[in-house]
Length: 511
Image 1 (cartoon, rainbow, N blue to C red):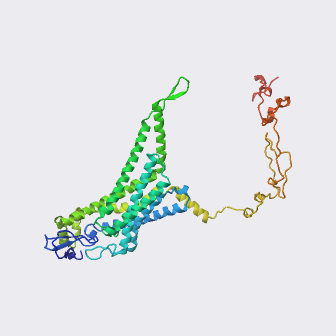
Image 2: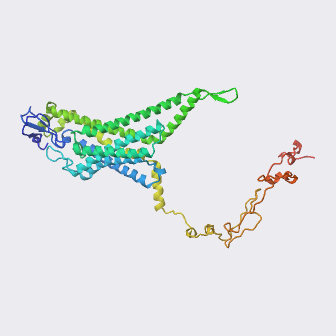
Image 3: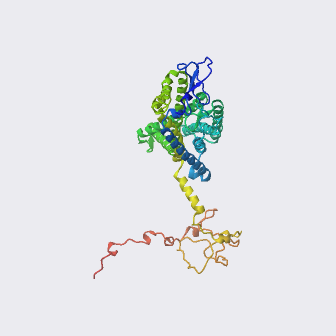
Protein backbone atom coordinates (compact mmCIF):
# COMPACT_ATOMS: atom_id res chain seq x y z
CA UNK A 1 0.00 0.00 0.00
CA UNK A 2 1.57 3.21 -1.15
CA UNK A 3 -0.12 5.54 1.26
CA UNK A 4 -2.30 4.29 4.09
CA UNK A 5 -3.28 7.84 4.93
CA UNK A 6 -5.26 7.88 1.69
CA UNK A 7 -7.97 6.09 3.63
CA UNK A 8 -8.62 9.22 5.59
CA UNK A 9 -9.76 12.50 4.27
CA UNK A 10 -10.69 15.09 6.84
CA UNK A 11 -13.76 17.09 5.86
CA UNK A 12 -15.57 19.89 7.53
CA UNK A 13 -18.40 18.30 9.39
CA UNK A 14 -21.80 19.57 8.32
CA UNK A 15 -23.80 17.70 10.92
CA UNK A 16 -24.90 15.03 8.43
CA UNK A 17 -24.35 11.32 8.66
CA UNK A 18 -24.62 10.28 4.98
CA UNK A 19 -21.90 9.15 2.59
CA UNK A 20 -20.26 11.23 -0.10
CA UNK A 21 -20.31 9.58 -3.53
CA UNK A 22 -18.70 11.62 -6.29
CA UNK A 23 -18.18 9.94 -9.69
CA UNK A 24 -17.75 6.49 -8.25
CA UNK A 25 -15.86 7.55 -5.13
CA UNK A 26 -16.94 5.77 -1.95
CA UNK A 27 -16.58 7.78 1.26
CA UNK A 28 -18.43 7.57 4.55
CA UNK A 29 -18.19 9.29 7.92
CA UNK A 30 -16.18 7.52 10.61
CA UNK A 31 -17.16 9.08 13.95
CA UNK A 32 -16.01 5.92 15.73
CA UNK A 33 -12.42 6.74 14.80
CA UNK A 34 -12.51 10.52 15.11
CA UNK A 35 -15.32 13.09 15.07
CA UNK A 36 -15.62 14.85 11.73
CA UNK A 37 -13.46 12.28 9.95
CA UNK A 38 -14.50 10.79 6.62
CA UNK A 39 -13.05 7.48 5.52
CA UNK A 40 -12.65 6.87 1.75
CA UNK A 41 -11.73 3.65 -0.03
CA UNK A 42 -8.53 4.15 -2.08
CA UNK A 43 -8.53 4.02 -5.87
CA UNK A 44 -8.62 1.58 -7.55
CA UNK A 45 -10.77 -0.37 -5.13
CA UNK A 46 -10.06 -3.70 -6.87
CA UNK A 47 -6.45 -3.59 -5.65
CA UNK A 48 -7.73 -3.82 -2.07
CA UNK A 49 -10.44 -6.41 -2.72
CA UNK A 50 -9.00 -8.98 -5.12
CA UNK A 51 -5.59 -10.64 -5.62
CA UNK A 52 -3.35 -10.13 -8.64
CA UNK A 53 -4.99 -13.06 -10.45
CA UNK A 54 -7.99 -10.78 -10.97
CA UNK A 55 -5.93 -8.72 -13.43
CA UNK A 56 -5.01 -11.90 -15.33
CA UNK A 57 -8.64 -12.92 -15.68
CA UNK A 58 -9.51 -9.40 -16.76
CA UNK A 59 -6.91 -9.54 -19.55
CA UNK A 60 -8.35 -12.90 -20.65
CA UNK A 61 -11.80 -11.32 -20.89
CA UNK A 62 -10.36 -8.49 -22.99
CA UNK A 63 -8.72 -11.00 -25.33
CA UNK A 64 -11.99 -12.87 -25.75
CA UNK A 65 -13.74 -9.60 -26.50
CA UNK A 66 -11.33 -8.99 -29.40
CA UNK A 67 -12.40 -12.29 -30.91
CA UNK A 68 -16.02 -11.31 -30.35
CA UNK A 69 -15.59 -8.00 -32.18
CA UNK A 70 -13.89 -9.74 -35.12
CA UNK A 71 -16.70 -12.33 -35.20
CA UNK A 72 -19.41 -9.67 -35.28
CA UNK A 73 -17.65 -7.73 -38.04
CA UNK A 74 -17.27 -10.94 -40.05
CA UNK A 75 -20.98 -11.67 -39.73
CA UNK A 76 -22.00 -8.15 -40.75
CA UNK A 77 -19.70 -8.17 -43.80
CA UNK A 78 -21.00 -11.62 -44.76
CA UNK A 79 -24.61 -10.42 -44.47
CA UNK A 80 -23.84 -7.54 -46.83
CA UNK A 81 -21.55 -9.23 -49.37
CA UNK A 82 -22.93 -12.76 -49.71
CA UNK A 83 -26.24 -13.87 -51.25
CA UNK A 84 -29.33 -14.29 -49.12
CA UNK A 85 -29.58 -18.05 -49.60
CA UNK A 86 -26.07 -18.47 -48.16
CA UNK A 87 -26.42 -16.33 -45.03
CA UNK A 88 -30.19 -16.44 -44.28
CA UNK A 89 -29.83 -12.89 -43.02
CA UNK A 90 -32.67 -11.11 -41.29
CA UNK A 91 -33.11 -7.65 -39.86
CA UNK A 92 -33.40 -9.12 -36.37
CA UNK A 93 -30.01 -10.77 -36.84
CA UNK A 94 -28.53 -7.48 -38.03
CA UNK A 95 -29.76 -5.58 -34.97
CA UNK A 96 -28.67 -8.24 -32.49
CA UNK A 97 -25.18 -8.46 -33.98
CA UNK A 98 -24.84 -4.67 -33.82
CA UNK A 99 -25.76 -4.69 -30.11
CA UNK A 100 -23.24 -7.43 -29.34
CA UNK A 101 -20.62 -5.51 -31.33
CA UNK A 102 -21.18 -2.44 -29.13
CA UNK A 103 -20.55 -4.49 -25.99
CA UNK A 104 -17.34 -5.87 -27.47
CA UNK A 105 -16.14 -2.38 -28.38
CA UNK A 106 -16.64 -1.36 -24.75
CA UNK A 107 -13.90 -3.86 -23.87
CA UNK A 108 -11.62 -3.23 -26.85
CA UNK A 109 -11.39 0.57 -26.60
CA UNK A 110 -9.78 0.59 -23.11
CA UNK A 111 -7.51 -2.28 -24.15
CA UNK A 112 -6.04 -0.20 -26.96
CA UNK A 113 -5.61 2.99 -24.87
CA UNK A 114 -4.97 1.70 -21.31
CA UNK A 115 -6.37 4.80 -19.59
CA UNK A 116 -5.56 5.77 -15.99
CA UNK A 117 -8.31 4.62 -13.68
CA UNK A 118 -7.81 7.15 -10.89
CA UNK A 119 -8.16 10.91 -10.88
CA UNK A 120 -6.58 11.19 -7.42
CA UNK A 121 -5.97 8.91 -4.42
CA UNK A 122 -9.62 8.31 -3.67
CA UNK A 123 -11.52 9.39 -6.83
CA UNK A 124 -11.73 7.32 -10.03
CA UNK A 125 -11.91 8.93 -13.44
CA UNK A 126 -15.31 9.39 -15.03
CA UNK A 127 -16.65 10.31 -18.47
CA UNK A 128 -15.89 14.00 -17.87
CA UNK A 129 -12.28 13.58 -16.84
CA UNK A 130 -11.33 10.80 -19.30
CA UNK A 131 -12.49 10.50 -22.92
CA UNK A 132 -11.75 6.77 -23.09
CA UNK A 133 -14.03 6.21 -20.13
CA UNK A 134 -16.81 8.11 -21.91
CA UNK A 135 -16.58 5.97 -25.06
CA UNK A 136 -16.21 2.73 -23.15
CA UNK A 137 -19.21 3.42 -20.94
CA UNK A 138 -21.29 4.61 -23.88
CA UNK A 139 -20.58 1.39 -25.82
CA UNK A 140 -21.45 -0.75 -22.79
CA UNK A 141 -24.76 1.07 -22.19
CA UNK A 142 -25.75 1.11 -25.87
CA UNK A 143 -24.78 -2.54 -26.33
CA UNK A 144 -26.64 -3.72 -23.25
CA UNK A 145 -29.81 -1.87 -24.22
CA UNK A 146 -29.62 -3.01 -27.87
CA UNK A 147 -29.12 -6.65 -26.91
CA UNK A 148 -32.03 -6.60 -24.47
CA UNK A 149 -34.51 -4.81 -26.72
CA UNK A 150 -33.79 -6.87 -29.84
CA UNK A 151 -33.86 -10.08 -27.84
CA UNK A 152 -37.40 -9.13 -26.82
CA UNK A 153 -38.39 -8.39 -30.43
CA UNK A 154 -36.93 -11.68 -31.63
CA UNK A 155 -38.66 -13.64 -28.88
CA UNK A 156 -41.97 -11.96 -29.70
CA UNK A 157 -41.55 -12.75 -33.40
CA UNK A 158 -40.86 -16.44 -32.73
CA UNK A 159 -43.80 -16.61 -30.32
CA UNK A 160 -46.17 -15.26 -32.98
CA UNK A 161 -44.91 -17.74 -35.57
CA UNK A 162 -44.90 -20.85 -33.39
CA UNK A 163 -47.88 -20.37 -31.08
CA UNK A 164 -50.27 -18.20 -33.09
CA UNK A 165 -49.18 -19.18 -36.63
CA UNK A 166 -48.79 -15.50 -37.57
CA UNK A 167 -45.92 -14.51 -39.85
CA UNK A 168 -44.71 -10.97 -38.98
CA UNK A 169 -44.64 -8.81 -42.08
CA UNK A 170 -43.48 -5.34 -43.05
CA UNK A 171 -45.75 -3.59 -40.56
CA UNK A 172 -44.18 -5.56 -37.73
CA UNK A 173 -40.71 -4.77 -39.06
CA UNK A 174 -41.33 -1.01 -39.31
CA UNK A 175 -42.95 -0.92 -35.88
CA UNK A 176 -40.09 -2.91 -34.35
CA UNK A 177 -37.46 -0.66 -35.91
CA UNK A 178 -39.16 2.52 -34.76
CA UNK A 179 -40.06 1.44 -31.24
CA UNK A 180 -36.89 -0.59 -30.69
CA UNK A 181 -34.35 2.07 -31.57
CA UNK A 182 -36.54 4.74 -29.98
CA UNK A 183 -36.55 2.96 -26.61
CA UNK A 184 -32.81 2.34 -26.86
CA UNK A 185 -32.07 6.01 -27.63
CA UNK A 186 -34.32 7.26 -24.82
CA UNK A 187 -32.86 5.01 -22.11
CA UNK A 188 -29.32 5.68 -23.33
CA UNK A 189 -29.78 9.45 -23.16
CA UNK A 190 -31.36 9.36 -19.72
CA UNK A 191 -28.71 7.02 -18.29
CA UNK A 192 -25.65 8.77 -19.69
CA UNK A 193 -26.97 12.20 -18.70
CA UNK A 194 -28.40 11.66 -15.21
CA UNK A 195 -26.30 8.74 -13.93
CA UNK A 196 -23.03 8.76 -15.86
CA UNK A 197 -20.19 6.22 -15.96
CA UNK A 198 -16.87 5.84 -14.17
CA UNK A 199 -14.13 3.30 -13.52
CA UNK A 200 -15.66 1.05 -10.87
CA UNK A 201 -13.56 -2.09 -11.39
CA UNK A 202 -11.13 -2.78 -14.18
CA UNK A 203 -10.39 -0.68 -17.26
CA UNK A 204 -14.04 -0.57 -18.31
CA UNK A 205 -16.32 2.26 -17.26
CA UNK A 206 -19.59 1.10 -15.75
CA UNK A 207 -22.77 2.90 -14.76
CA UNK A 208 -22.53 4.76 -11.47
CA UNK A 209 -24.59 3.63 -8.51
CA UNK A 210 -26.61 6.82 -8.18
CA UNK A 211 -30.14 6.34 -9.64
CA UNK A 212 -28.84 3.51 -11.84
CA UNK A 213 -31.51 1.03 -10.74
CA UNK A 214 -34.38 3.32 -11.71
CA UNK A 215 -32.91 4.58 -14.97
CA UNK A 216 -30.91 1.66 -16.38
CA UNK A 217 -30.82 -1.64 -14.53
CA UNK A 218 -34.52 -1.67 -13.69
CA UNK A 219 -35.75 -1.26 -17.31
CA UNK A 220 -33.05 -3.66 -18.50
CA UNK A 221 -34.12 -6.32 -16.03
CA UNK A 222 -37.82 -5.73 -16.75
CA UNK A 223 -37.41 -6.22 -20.53
CA UNK A 224 -35.25 -9.27 -19.90
CA UNK A 225 -37.84 -10.84 -17.59
CA UNK A 226 -40.61 -10.16 -20.13
CA UNK A 227 -38.52 -11.85 -22.84
CA UNK A 228 -37.92 -14.82 -20.55
CA UNK A 229 -41.65 -15.18 -19.84
CA UNK A 230 -42.53 -15.16 -23.55
CA UNK A 231 -39.73 -17.62 -24.33
CA UNK A 232 -40.88 -20.00 -21.60
CA UNK A 233 -44.46 -19.79 -22.91
CA UNK A 234 -43.18 -20.72 -26.37
CA UNK A 235 -41.21 -23.66 -24.99
CA UNK A 236 -44.25 -24.83 -23.02
CA UNK A 237 -46.40 -24.76 -26.15
CA UNK A 238 -43.80 -26.78 -28.08
CA UNK A 239 -43.66 -29.37 -25.30
CA UNK A 240 -47.47 -29.53 -25.20
CA UNK A 241 -47.67 -30.14 -28.96
CA UNK A 242 -44.95 -32.79 -28.80
CA UNK A 243 -46.59 -34.66 -25.92
CA UNK A 244 -50.02 -34.46 -27.54
CA UNK A 245 -48.63 -35.88 -30.77
CA UNK A 246 -46.70 -38.59 -28.95
CA UNK A 247 -49.72 -39.87 -27.01
CA UNK A 248 -52.24 -39.53 -29.79
CA UNK A 249 -53.52 -42.72 -31.41
CA UNK A 250 -53.53 -43.39 -35.14
CA UNK A 251 -56.59 -42.33 -37.06
CA UNK A 252 -59.04 -45.19 -37.28
CA UNK A 253 -61.18 -45.66 -40.39
CA UNK A 254 -64.59 -47.29 -40.41
CA UNK A 255 -66.70 -48.36 -43.37
CA UNK A 256 -70.01 -46.57 -43.78
CA UNK A 257 -73.13 -48.10 -45.27
CA UNK A 258 -72.18 -46.70 -48.66
CA UNK A 259 -68.81 -48.42 -48.62
CA UNK A 260 -66.82 -45.18 -48.19
CA UNK A 261 -64.36 -44.69 -45.30
CA UNK A 262 -65.58 -42.46 -42.48
CA UNK A 263 -63.63 -40.83 -39.67
CA UNK A 264 -64.67 -40.44 -36.07
CA UNK A 265 -64.29 -37.22 -34.10
CA UNK A 266 -61.25 -38.56 -32.25
CA UNK A 267 -59.48 -39.45 -35.49
CA UNK A 268 -60.09 -35.95 -36.89
CA UNK A 269 -58.63 -34.43 -33.72
CA UNK A 270 -55.65 -36.76 -34.05
CA UNK A 271 -54.98 -35.62 -37.59
CA UNK A 272 -55.31 -31.98 -36.50
CA UNK A 273 -52.80 -32.53 -33.68
CA UNK A 274 -50.34 -34.13 -36.07
CA UNK A 275 -50.72 -31.26 -38.52
CA UNK A 276 -49.97 -28.75 -35.75
CA UNK A 277 -47.01 -30.86 -34.66
CA UNK A 278 -45.57 -30.89 -38.19
CA UNK A 279 -45.97 -27.12 -38.47
CA UNK A 280 -44.36 -26.43 -35.10
CA UNK A 281 -41.55 -28.85 -35.82
CA UNK A 282 -40.82 -27.11 -39.11
CA UNK A 283 -40.76 -23.64 -37.52
CA UNK A 284 -38.59 -24.80 -34.61
CA UNK A 285 -36.17 -26.45 -37.02
CA UNK A 286 -35.85 -23.18 -38.93
CA UNK A 287 -35.58 -21.03 -35.77
CA UNK A 288 -33.44 -23.18 -33.46
CA UNK A 289 -30.38 -20.98 -33.93
CA UNK A 290 -32.30 -17.85 -32.97
CA UNK A 291 -33.94 -19.56 -30.00
CA UNK A 292 -30.57 -20.79 -28.71
CA UNK A 293 -28.79 -17.46 -28.98
CA UNK A 294 -31.78 -15.75 -27.34
CA UNK A 295 -31.49 -18.14 -24.39
CA UNK A 296 -27.76 -17.41 -24.04
CA UNK A 297 -28.19 -13.64 -24.26
CA UNK A 298 -31.04 -13.65 -21.76
CA UNK A 299 -28.85 -15.46 -19.24
CA UNK A 300 -26.11 -12.85 -19.74
CA UNK A 301 -28.44 -9.86 -19.44
CA UNK A 302 -30.37 -11.08 -16.40
CA UNK A 303 -27.25 -12.24 -14.58
CA UNK A 304 -25.46 -8.95 -15.28
CA UNK A 305 -28.45 -6.90 -14.12
CA UNK A 306 -28.88 -8.87 -10.91
CA UNK A 307 -25.18 -8.64 -10.05
CA UNK A 308 -24.97 -4.87 -10.50
CA UNK A 309 -28.23 -4.22 -8.70
CA UNK A 310 -26.97 -6.31 -5.80
CA UNK A 311 -23.62 -4.48 -5.85
CA UNK A 312 -25.30 -1.07 -5.78
CA UNK A 313 -27.45 -2.12 -2.85
CA UNK A 314 -24.37 -3.33 -0.97
CA UNK A 315 -22.57 -0.05 -1.56
CA UNK A 316 -25.59 1.92 -0.40
CA UNK A 317 -26.03 -0.17 2.75
CA UNK A 318 -22.36 -0.07 3.70
CA UNK A 319 -22.17 3.67 3.28
CA UNK A 320 -24.87 4.07 5.93
CA UNK A 321 -23.51 1.38 8.26
CA UNK A 322 -19.86 2.12 8.83
CA UNK A 323 -19.67 -0.37 11.69
CA UNK A 324 -19.73 -3.31 9.27
CA UNK A 325 -16.90 -1.95 7.10
CA UNK A 326 -14.72 -0.81 9.99
CA UNK A 327 -12.97 -4.20 10.60
CA UNK A 328 -11.84 -4.35 6.95
CA UNK A 329 -10.46 -0.82 7.02
CA UNK A 330 -8.65 -1.48 10.29
CA UNK A 331 -7.16 -4.65 8.76
CA UNK A 332 -5.83 -2.71 5.77
CA UNK A 333 -4.35 -0.03 8.02
CA UNK A 334 -2.74 -2.65 10.23
CA UNK A 335 -1.26 -4.61 7.29
CA UNK A 336 -0.07 -2.04 4.75
CA UNK A 337 2.44 -4.45 3.16
CA UNK A 338 0.32 -7.64 3.39
CA UNK A 339 -3.10 -6.58 2.24
CA UNK A 340 -3.82 -10.09 0.92
CA UNK A 341 -4.78 -10.93 4.50
CA UNK A 342 -7.78 -8.64 4.17
CA UNK A 343 -9.08 -9.84 0.79
CA UNK A 344 -11.48 -12.36 2.25
CA UNK A 345 -13.02 -9.74 4.54
CA UNK A 346 -13.43 -7.27 1.69
CA UNK A 347 -15.00 -9.80 -0.70
CA UNK A 348 -17.43 -10.84 2.02
CA UNK A 349 -18.56 -7.23 2.28
CA UNK A 350 -18.77 -6.33 -1.44
CA UNK A 351 -18.66 -9.01 -4.17
CA UNK A 352 -16.53 -12.14 -4.43
CA UNK A 353 -14.05 -12.49 -7.28
CA UNK A 354 -15.67 -15.50 -9.07
CA UNK A 355 -18.89 -13.53 -9.57
CA UNK A 356 -17.09 -10.52 -11.04
CA UNK A 357 -15.02 -12.77 -13.31
CA UNK A 358 -18.18 -14.55 -14.48
CA UNK A 359 -19.75 -11.20 -15.43
CA UNK A 360 -16.69 -10.15 -17.44
CA UNK A 361 -16.27 -13.49 -19.22
CA UNK A 362 -19.95 -13.78 -20.12
CA UNK A 363 -19.92 -10.30 -21.65
CA UNK A 364 -16.75 -11.01 -23.63
CA UNK A 365 -18.07 -14.35 -24.95
CA UNK A 366 -21.21 -12.82 -26.49
CA UNK A 367 -19.56 -12.18 -29.86
CA UNK A 368 -18.14 -15.70 -30.14
CA UNK A 369 -21.52 -17.19 -29.23
CA UNK A 370 -23.10 -15.06 -31.95
CA UNK A 371 -20.67 -16.37 -34.58
CA UNK A 372 -21.14 -19.96 -33.42
CA UNK A 373 -24.93 -19.85 -33.69
CA UNK A 374 -25.56 -17.40 -36.54
CA UNK A 375 -22.57 -18.39 -38.67
CA UNK A 376 -23.73 -21.15 -41.00
CA UNK A 377 -21.43 -23.49 -42.86
CA UNK A 378 -22.70 -22.11 -46.16
CA UNK A 379 -21.14 -18.72 -45.28
CA UNK A 380 -17.63 -20.16 -45.29
CA UNK A 381 -18.17 -22.13 -48.50
CA UNK A 382 -19.61 -19.01 -50.16
CA UNK A 383 -16.53 -16.99 -49.19
CA UNK A 384 -14.27 -19.76 -50.51
CA UNK A 385 -16.13 -19.88 -53.82
CA UNK A 386 -15.96 -16.10 -54.15
CA UNK A 387 -12.22 -15.96 -53.50
CA UNK A 388 -11.52 -18.89 -55.80
CA UNK A 389 -13.57 -17.41 -58.62
CA UNK A 390 -11.79 -14.04 -58.42
CA UNK A 391 -8.22 -15.09 -57.70
CA UNK A 392 -8.12 -18.72 -58.80
CA UNK A 393 -5.95 -19.90 -61.71
CA UNK A 394 -8.67 -21.97 -63.37
CA UNK A 395 -10.90 -19.64 -65.36
CA UNK A 396 -13.76 -20.56 -67.67
CA UNK A 397 -12.85 -20.35 -71.39
CA UNK A 398 -14.99 -17.94 -73.36
CA UNK A 399 -14.85 -17.96 -77.16
CA UNK A 400 -14.25 -14.73 -79.03
CA UNK A 401 -17.31 -15.45 -81.15
CA UNK A 402 -19.46 -15.25 -78.04
CA UNK A 403 -18.32 -11.67 -77.46
CA UNK A 404 -19.26 -10.52 -80.96
CA UNK A 405 -22.39 -8.41 -80.81
CA UNK A 406 -24.68 -9.01 -83.77
CA UNK A 407 -28.37 -8.79 -84.44
CA UNK A 408 -28.23 -11.92 -86.54
CA UNK A 409 -29.32 -14.90 -84.50
CA UNK A 410 -27.13 -17.17 -86.64
CA UNK A 411 -24.04 -15.57 -85.09
CA UNK A 412 -24.62 -17.58 -81.93
CA UNK A 413 -24.63 -20.95 -83.72
CA UNK A 414 -21.64 -23.21 -83.26
CA UNK A 415 -19.32 -23.21 -86.28
CA UNK A 416 -18.50 -26.39 -88.12
CA UNK A 417 -14.74 -26.84 -87.97
CA UNK A 418 -12.99 -29.50 -90.08
CA UNK A 419 -14.47 -32.64 -91.47
CA UNK A 420 -16.21 -34.03 -88.46
CA UNK A 421 -17.91 -37.40 -88.92
CA UNK A 422 -21.63 -37.24 -89.34
CA UNK A 423 -23.46 -39.23 -86.70
CA UNK A 424 -26.80 -40.52 -87.85
CA UNK A 425 -29.54 -40.32 -85.30
CA UNK A 426 -31.73 -43.40 -84.84
CA UNK A 427 -34.89 -43.55 -86.86
CA UNK A 428 -38.13 -43.01 -85.04
CA UNK A 429 -41.68 -43.78 -85.85
CA UNK A 430 -42.67 -40.11 -85.47
CA UNK A 431 -42.00 -38.04 -88.55
CA UNK A 432 -41.20 -34.34 -88.48
CA UNK A 433 -43.23 -31.86 -90.49
CA UNK A 434 -39.95 -30.64 -92.02
CA UNK A 435 -38.89 -34.08 -93.23
CA UNK A 436 -38.94 -34.70 -96.95
CA UNK A 437 -38.01 -31.15 -98.01
CA UNK A 438 -34.75 -29.34 -98.39
CA UNK A 439 -33.81 -26.72 -95.82
CA UNK A 440 -31.66 -23.81 -96.88
CA UNK A 441 -28.23 -23.78 -95.35
CA UNK A 442 -25.71 -20.97 -95.17
CA UNK A 443 -22.04 -21.13 -96.03
CA UNK A 444 -21.13 -22.73 -92.73
CA UNK A 445 -23.53 -25.61 -93.22
CA UNK A 446 -25.83 -24.51 -90.42
CA UNK A 447 -29.55 -24.97 -91.20
CA UNK A 448 -31.27 -21.68 -91.78
CA UNK A 449 -34.12 -22.11 -89.31
CA UNK A 450 -34.47 -18.35 -88.87
CA UNK A 451 -35.19 -17.44 -92.51
CA UNK A 452 -38.52 -15.98 -93.39
CA UNK A 453 -39.00 -18.32 -96.31
CA UNK A 454 -39.03 -21.37 -94.11
CA UNK A 455 -42.62 -22.27 -93.37
CA UNK A 456 -44.12 -25.47 -92.16
CA UNK A 457 -46.91 -27.13 -94.03
CA UNK A 458 -50.00 -28.10 -92.22
CA UNK A 459 -51.06 -31.63 -92.97
CA UNK A 460 -54.62 -32.38 -92.18
CA UNK A 461 -54.95 -35.60 -90.21
CA UNK A 462 -57.00 -38.49 -91.44
CA UNK A 463 -59.50 -38.21 -88.62
CA UNK A 464 -60.25 -34.59 -87.79
CA UNK A 465 -63.19 -33.44 -85.67
CA UNK A 466 -62.52 -29.68 -85.82
CA UNK A 467 -65.53 -29.15 -88.08
CA UNK A 468 -68.65 -31.32 -88.51
CA UNK A 469 -68.69 -33.33 -91.67
CA UNK A 470 -70.76 -36.16 -93.03
CA UNK A 471 -69.35 -39.61 -92.35
CA UNK A 472 -67.95 -41.48 -95.31
CA UNK A 473 -66.69 -44.96 -95.94
CA UNK A 474 -63.13 -43.66 -96.57
CA UNK A 475 -62.89 -42.01 -93.22
CA UNK A 476 -64.40 -44.94 -91.39
CA UNK A 477 -62.07 -47.45 -93.03
CA UNK A 478 -58.61 -46.84 -91.67
CA UNK A 479 -55.78 -49.07 -92.67
CA UNK A 480 -53.42 -49.49 -89.73
CA UNK A 481 -50.34 -51.63 -89.52
CA UNK A 482 -49.32 -52.04 -85.86
CA UNK A 483 -45.77 -52.90 -86.84
CA UNK A 484 -45.19 -49.34 -88.07
CA UNK A 485 -45.73 -48.00 -84.54
CA UNK A 486 -43.84 -50.81 -82.81
CA UNK A 487 -47.03 -52.37 -81.44
CA UNK A 488 -47.16 -56.05 -80.61
CA UNK A 489 -50.13 -56.71 -82.90
CA UNK A 490 -51.91 -59.34 -80.84
CA UNK A 491 -52.37 -62.96 -81.80
CA UNK A 492 -52.57 -62.12 -85.49
CA UNK A 493 -48.87 -61.39 -85.67
CA UNK A 494 -47.78 -63.57 -82.77
CA UNK A 495 -49.65 -66.90 -83.02
CA UNK A 496 -49.28 -69.33 -80.12
CA UNK A 497 -46.69 -72.09 -80.50
CA UNK A 498 -46.40 -75.47 -78.87
CA UNK A 499 -43.60 -76.60 -76.65
CA UNK A 500 -42.21 -78.84 -79.39
CA UNK A 501 -41.65 -75.85 -81.63
CA UNK A 502 -39.57 -74.00 -79.04
CA UNK A 503 -35.85 -74.55 -79.40
CA UNK A 504 -34.41 -75.29 -76.01
CA UNK A 505 -30.82 -74.11 -75.43
CA UNK A 506 -28.26 -76.86 -75.04
CA UNK A 507 -30.34 -79.48 -76.90
CA UNK A 508 -30.25 -80.62 -80.59
CA UNK A 509 -32.72 -82.64 -82.65
CA UNK A 510 -31.62 -86.18 -83.29
CA UNK A 511 -33.08 -87.96 -86.30
